[in-house]
Image (cartoon, rainbow, N blue to C red; front, side, top):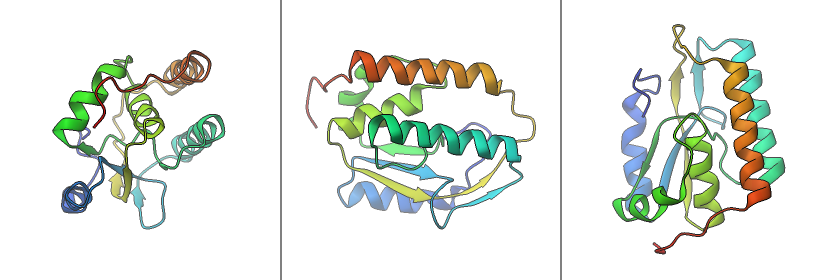
Length: 150
């Protein structure tokens, strides 16, 4: 989860229920029906939606929000999946979900209540450019297979 607690913790029980019912990963989504987002600028909203559309165009993924930091997974999934994720910066979330989905892990989107942090220090343009380079790395270079299937 994000250190600034932008995601309301009321979503935790839904995430745990998803894992208990057989999903490998539960992901908070600010972009799906039922989600509520407060204090987000139009610029951030547009960039987020455009980024997620780009991911969908390149990878035909089913998850709806690649960069909501509110995620949960089982220990076995983490042990198997994390060694395949190379990025150690903002692209980490996106890479984790793409690698997971393309390795047939079950991902459950959970609508969340999100309050944007007005003091965010994320540099949108440079971060977006690094994310696009990460997407191209996966698209051109291939998506790694899990060494130890879950």
